[in-house]
Length: 124
Image 1 (cartoon, rainbow, N blue to C red):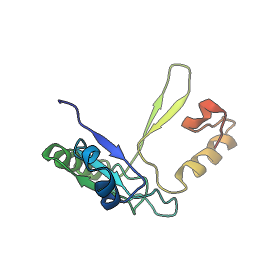
Image 2 (image 1 turned 120 degrees about the vertical axis):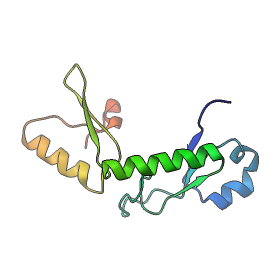
Image 3 (image 1 turned 90 degrees about the vertical axis):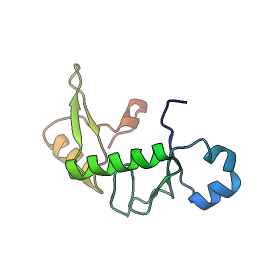
Image 4 (image 1 turned 60 degrees about the vertical axis):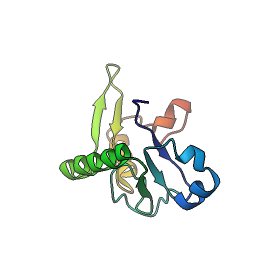
């Protein structure tokens, strides 16, 4: 297979490996542990600092090395992408509270602000 397989799981690696070894064998890079909103992002691809990256293949190890290098080069910043209809999307992982602060400033300027789930009606 010539596809990178990256899996996010809210479960500890050890539990997944014990209970789902045949599936784990198909994964290149696993981001494990539950998301914790109280822990700031500390590494690329993480939602929170308590999460772990486990490279399960050479390809997975290389994916992780590249992600870390890109993260260092970008210093954890996010990109803003404006669509033709004027909507703006954030690509990257903002720090704790960043989206709330941004949403407040944009609303203060008269903008209507939604999360990606906003397409289903949720707002920030």
